[in-house]
Image (cartoon, rainbow, N blue to C red; front, side, top):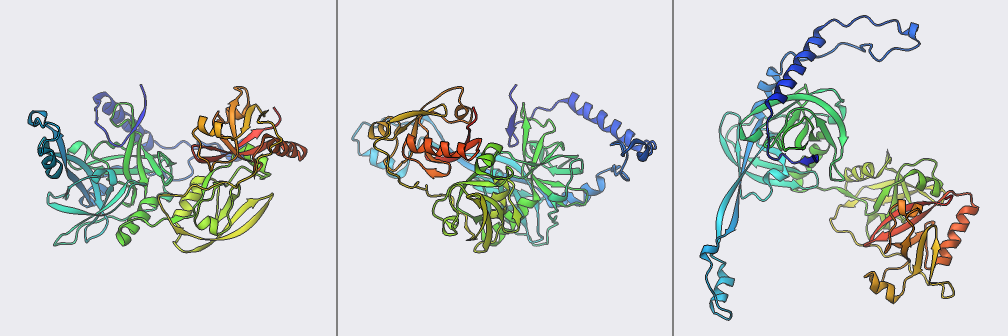
Length: 505
């Protein structure tokens, strides 16, 4: 049975599972009340065993107090969407060339009947004047949004802003009286094993509370800006957009997705962390949209082979594969640079760099430390505003060596100079330069690293190549320098990535 990530799909409840969880919880509470046996003297053992209790335990007797205090700030969300449905019974017979063709083009097709579709979700109030946070997918494409307060009042809501990248939306309702609200907490302070409380509207059953623990942190599901808290608190369809509280009553996450083989909760739920959500909400409230920092580079993680090929002391940072028009290009960043530090933050990988840049003030000039040519350099880059579309970078043009053979076997790959016939064969535009891979041996390291027929090798050893002779010369130079691997810039469908190929095989 395949496991899939669900954004709160249909639910199948299991009475046996509920009973098992209840028995396990009772057993856990009984264990927690039992006195902790004295540990042996750590000095007698050489070090303290893991079973030694480092301090007092906190096992809540009840969540009733928190539930009573927090529930009034949680809302049920109902959306209505108008959809069209074809009705073939109303289809008129219109002969070709009939003047009625113009009528149906101008006034629409009567076969399309308007229908209404309803969806349910949750949300929470974050200010007394009626700002409400929920998931974007809860209100996406909605024509009408209705908010049901805890005590039963219904209010009409309007969308202030939405962010598809983090699946967060900000709504606003108008009320004659100040509304009860909750505040964001520090999700970075949450530890695996901490108690959490989820409140929402599962399956349209009305306000419901479930408890669990933080199962894991820093989960990534589908986006560059993901920072999910994993929890075993029961969340299901309808909980989407609802809050995940810590024991201080602060929101540390927005319940967004579950992992399930059957569409129901199996104790693997995900809430977008408040560290991400609070920034998004502030920007949506202030600007009606997100305003993320933009560096303007394509990047990938540095693995051990790449680090060795580039002379990096450790596999860390983000290697730049392309520099389209943008802030990075203006600041002097080049393809092949490894970004090690952005401002005051050390860069461990691409995910960290993306989030650090996104959280940086627009227009701020930042010191960027890059590793280039065997040494570190510091560049100054003015952070821009993120744009959805990025221009494709064009590699340096290089003249092929006419005396070199048309193709050659190198490192288990057959590479060839691009000509008109190969461009037609592989549907390549005229501005693509480099060597084309026309074959790869299954046993070659290049095959293991994902290089395939039709790929373009644009750079070898971080220098442009236009002939097999140039490629072989770069490989020879790397071997003479004592390198065990060499870095290739490989393009496929216009997308670049670096690949470190082993030279010792």
